[in-house]
Image (cartoon, rainbow, N blue to C red; front, top):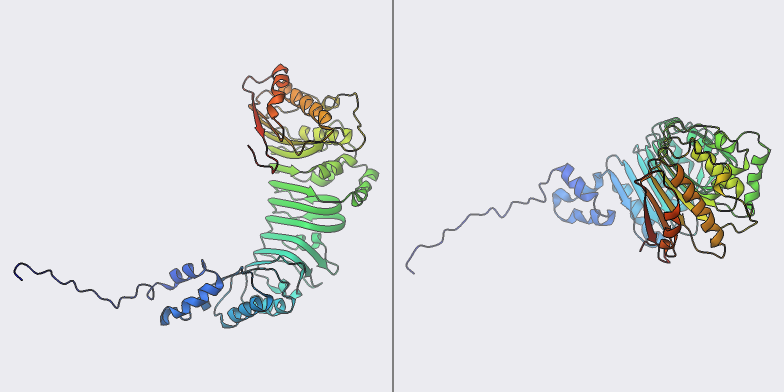
Length: 431
């Protein structure tokens, strides 16, 4: 055939880019894979055969039968080489027999991040060997029984601790455990029962979430910036909080008085009820000079809760955002025929910096008319004394625009104040 012939391009077909990847890049790839898949990469080439054995982050999140989960973790830990800085296990099984030997291996590897979550019906017994892992910086435990040895001197490097659905065995309390972590910055305590006072002493704590049951609360956390306090108690256990009635000191001061740097505070109706049990004075027992956002729920016809809420508002001179949820009072109406919020409200020091007010309803009940009265009176109070208010939002399951006519009749101190109405669907989504 006449004419120019195409030139052949020489290609080196032996180049194996995957095999020649740097070790650090291999590890970045492997840690993105489930452990079982990471182990399978050993068949790629001879240079990948043992690559998985040196990855420093081991994550097990597979829904497998218990024996398969235990066998997988055992094999990975036995053949692993080098340090293990992160170990995460999410399992439906308690793995009680295996967790002890796993903790022995991890304690020898200077583990820094430990995450154990057992989602089954049985809580896993965490052995005392955990407390010999002194290099730990972050610990997450769920559905566990934690055995704290008497010799434990604390986690000196720990900055994050999250405990959910847990019990502490022995004489160690939550307070003892927390106080042994001087660098602790983030603390989560969910679904627990604490007899007596939950006393949190944490000089470097910045973020706190509490959802549980206790008789009393005292926070000594001077650097706390964000706090969420939800008390999850049954009606029978509610009587435990009556211990506050015998105290001459305000519960607001006892529980929240050592929070000079708090910026965000989120509390539920049960905690407001607890704050209302102590004496409520006209003048705030403490001042939060950094507090800019408050979220709370309050029963609309409970005199003590309203007094406690107002006292809290007075304690926050630079409050910028207020999220308040109105709940229907299911017991005796303590404010029948009386004003709700004007009983103790003093406009001289309330809401001077408030820009956003979000009013929410949990659900519609037979007592919604009393709830509406309380909400409208509170809205009228805020509109009349908040000089820089920009937005008043009402979120309701019913059509919230029915309140527009009455709201338009209230005098507004701020010319910028606008009304926003948002309706929720039955599943709670905004529509």
